[in-house]
Image 1 (cartoon, helix red, strand yellow):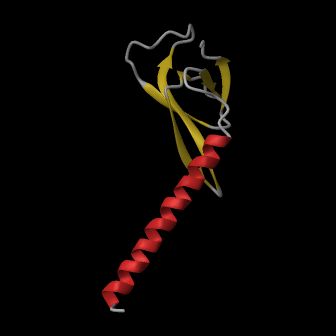
Image 2 (cartoon, rainbow, N blue to C red):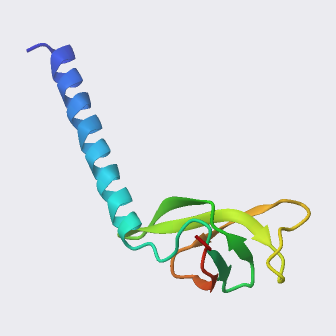
Image 3 (cartoon, rainbow, N blue to C red):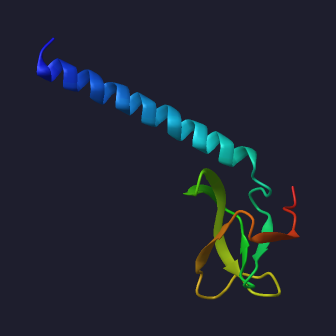
Length: 100
């Protein structure tokens, strides 16, 4: 085995490890999600969003889900500036469940 072969095999093993690791992180975060697409949630600071997509962020040892969507006014209508916000898991409460 040459040095190039050695490096290529290590790089491939590292890439496979990172892919598997990321899949496990995403699976864990998806499993602890409390809210769904279309739900309206409120953060501790008062910001309100309608969830349009999920994300994942890793704080400390475990990954946590994030919820992103357009910001809403207190009457639950979209803001005029069409701004979006992201609310992190554990910092949100359900305002209104999505209507199916």
